[in-house]
Length: 94
Image 1 (spheres, rainbow, N blue to C red):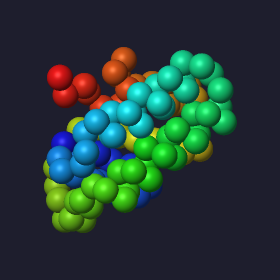
Image 2: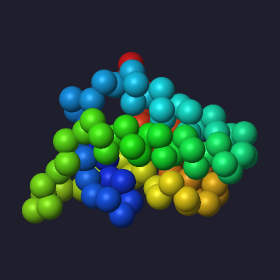
Image 3: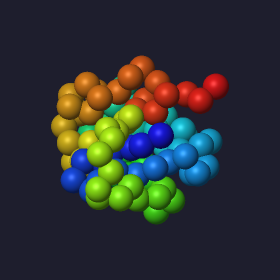
């Protein structure tokens, strides 16, 4: 699965620990539901950093699209909410 982090590029998360990735994704969704902007931005930054640290960057000459888009950590809650699927950003692998 290819994830685009806005402003930072695309990352292949196929070999990333999926349970941890889902945990951080769920934290973002819970934070958005709470409406607490500070919590949202912390959770989004944690998810972004996990992907950045553990996923494989996709080559700049890759012409395919992204399966998932992760917004900037300082994005507005309403903009983040529009990108959520009801399962967070990432579909539940189960």
